[in-house]
Amino acid sequence: TQLLEQSPQFLSIQEGENLTVYCNSSSVFSSLQWYRQEPGEGPVLLVTVVTGGEVKKLKRLTFQFGDARKDSSLHITAAQPGDTGLYLCAGASGGTASKLTFGTGTRLQVTL
Amino acid sequence: DADVTQTPRNRITKTGKRIMLECSQTKGHDRMYWYRQDPGLGLRLIYYSFDVKDINKGEISDGYSVSRQAQAKFSLSLESAIPNQTALYFCATSDPRGRTYNEQFFGPGTRLTVL
Image (tube, rainbow over all chains, first blue to last red; front, side, top):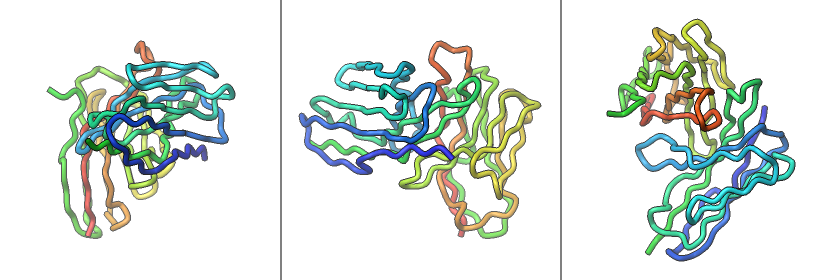
């Protein structure tokens, strides 16, 4: 069974601070996705990274896929209260990347 | 209107009862999935279906069954509910032909409590 461990599990910071969330596995994935989930809703895709070493930026969010495609990180610059939520990484595998293995999740709270 | 809908949104039931959770989608996607979410464990795959005639077990299928009644409908059943099946359940869809690599689109979830 493939496992994706996220750290930290919980993070409470003040507005304006920077943070990094890590997603680690011993398995290789064909691609890796990051989702954000808000209370009472399902996860929503933020980004997909496909190539080892790839870096993608989405406004204040920077996503990186490890060279060996086993790990990933999410860095948020100058966090805002609107960034509050549960962040989930998900590794894709299978012949057509048809199945996702989700990480354990990082719950982020950004306060004023 | 939401593209992926789930009913009911909340359900409280007793041990031993049969429960069905329903999922409908208007996205036209062939692939549908059922997950359960527990604190600290992320999302775990229960069953998935790539088309109406294709049903596959996920990592935690014991105690669950599914039915794909049509391309747009995928239901999850708990034949005899037990307390450790208390969780948040999500339905999702995907289209591998889409621009985003196997992006999954989730419903709003069903919170199930088994007493």
